[in-house]
Length: 151
Image (cartoon, rainbow, N blue to C red; front, side, top):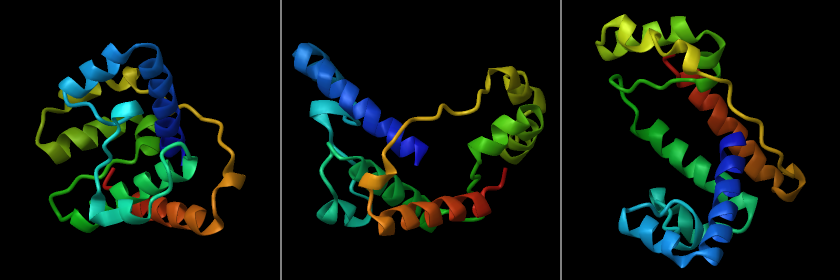
């Protein structure tokens, strides 16, 4: 939910920026960034866009998050390394060592960065504006990701 709230906030921020300066939108589109703002072109994972809410609603970004991560869960195989960022920030050095091992890298290649990891920010959001079924689906998707996380 927090990542969806962050994406929603970024979209709103870029809409404001694009209103003030069209060059920013043109530049972002020219370099292939269509994630937020007036140039938004969401990835249509498994045709989720056919029933999606509007991008100016938090529900859209929760639906997008669900579609993306359910797609990842369906595509994941034994070679996929799923990382729980929450767990990564709880024990960064140990988690980065395990990640380096899973990726076949020298442990020090990642553990040297342990101090750079910070817990994710908390974003305020009005959950009341989200349908109960959507909240349940987001929670179930998060739980599936967490259960399947290798690290």
